[in-house]
Image (cartoon, rainbow, N blue to C red; front, top):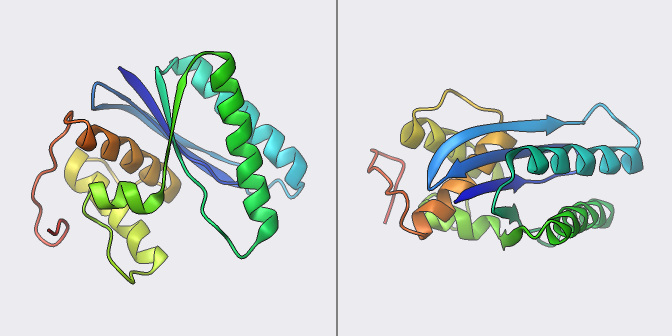
Length: 168
């Protein structure tokens, strides 16, 4: 089964493709230089749906949005998720929403009270240690981790014990 995961944001969206729990490809759509938020949302949705059309995944795993003190950002993320979900609905692609805390817990990198930057760094290290990947852009690494977490949950990938990374 081909799965695509998305770490969607209003400026840079990471994506990854796994087939039967094995890494295939990943990348990111970086639109941070586009200062027009409406145009950026349109371009982000357009580029993501092109990726979905190209890879033809059976399932999309989309990081769920959580509350944010910035209402404008929350609305933009909700609109982007809605556009992606609508495209998937039209093309009969299953969509799964997963919270950051959920995929991090599956990968054993969730720590109570940990700062956001520390958790992001753990995602980068996890990609290197578990998949022998070079240093990735952070949004790309988190999309790989989202897909990897689903593979772990579904018994398609077993995490290797690595000193200092995985806890109980």
